[in-house]
Amino acid sequence: MGRWEGVAEIQNKKAKVIVDFAGGNRNLSAVISVPDDRPLGKPLINIRYQPPHLHFELQATERTIIFDGSRDGQVISGTIRGGEISAPVSLQRIGAVPPTPYKQEEVRFRNGDITLAGNRDVTIKIFLKANHTIEQAPDFLDTMLDWTVKRVRISN
Image 1 (tube, rainbow, N blue to C red):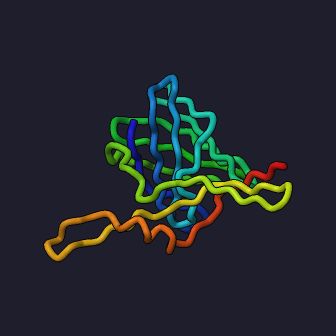
Image 2: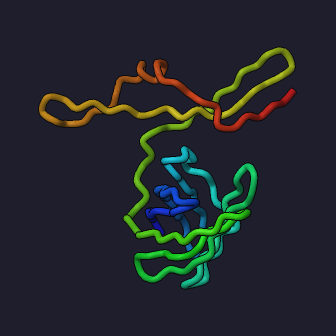
């Protein structure tokens, strides 16, 4: 189904919303990104598409956010709700899902019997040459980037 983008206005604050769908009607998967609030590529759950109706959920830390709406051609319109929040959302189909501007690497740290594991996102930097062609940054720059552990598993 591709990339869909729009804006949600929640509690008088506008936020860009990007939803990337993959698969078909029976094996649909999707991730959501809200760049202004930092969730990037967060998996959606309980996705159901029975044309034209669409339903999906986002498991947030404090609540489940639910979207119910419908697709009309290149537009998906509906309402998100969760807790005391309810807001209309309209998404426009942009095209195919582009490659991410970062790569993910698994990391592990061991301290005695405890192992911390997670993923780090490494931004793929590009440079413009004098003639305005683009080339990927040298690999050594990866070691200079900040990283964050997005999920942590503890095992012993």
